[in-house]
Image (cartoon, rainbow, N blue to C red; front, side):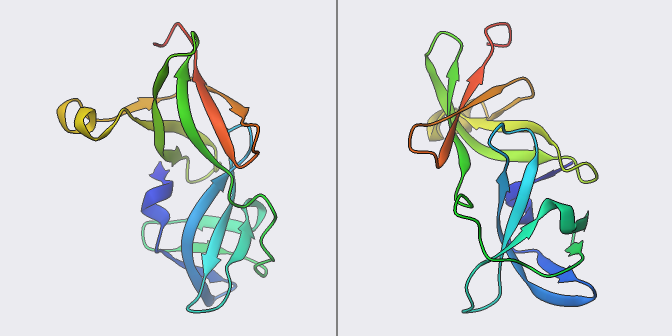
Length: 148
């Protein structure tokens, strides 16, 4: 398992040549899978590496095949607010943990706020549902009542 934050800054190698560095990872709208990576090289514009082209996400680089593509319109999509089943605000998503072979989201790291992070640490949610927000660029994470 690896986290999306750990991928930031890793070099991306496609067909044996370096094409840039990972800027961020984007998950699917249901929050269950990695959709792709946003890649940038120097002052060039950001490019898109879809999950189908990712062969391996290692500890020192991301390896894939083919060419990077133009960014899709919703490449800014991210999971953000976390609420319980009763609507109480629990925190925000601070990271996603991804299975390196299947590229599935295994867990979400939830931050309750800076003070709580220092006192209690962050917690991991493996059971969650995602509802897209009205604006369309963020997903609202719902934690079932049994887990709260």
